[in-house]
Image (cartoon, rainbow, N blue to C red):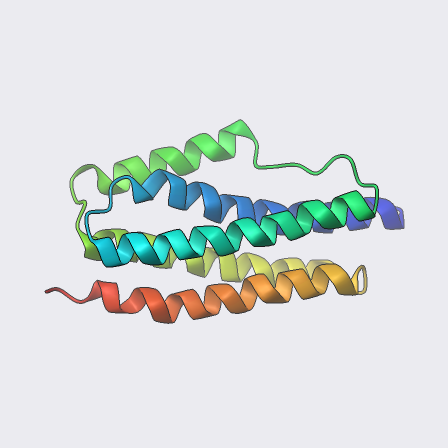
Length: 149
């Protein structure tokens, strides 16, 4: 695989991680009844969108035209998972738990992507590091929502 293909593959991995987070929040925020959690998820969504935009800008600068969002199968699986997970329980605690699990999955993906794409792009490493650190901080902000009132 040539350098451009590796760069594109790495970029798509980071971009899809951010887009999964944005879509998850879009799908779940409509079910949230707690205003504090709505505010937290809205802030997270904004930051994930900014990171996705950084990926888009990187693609433009590098003349990468095949930046790919998640495919419709992945989007459908995510939507179904969220709807099944909230069908019987729309409590703040349950939604926070679902968001935490998704965040942990995002962190795992960051770690694997960084290892899989060593020495490809310091700029993409930087975006991925921002995503990783943001998700680590999200854990601390979401944990309080697990406590019953």
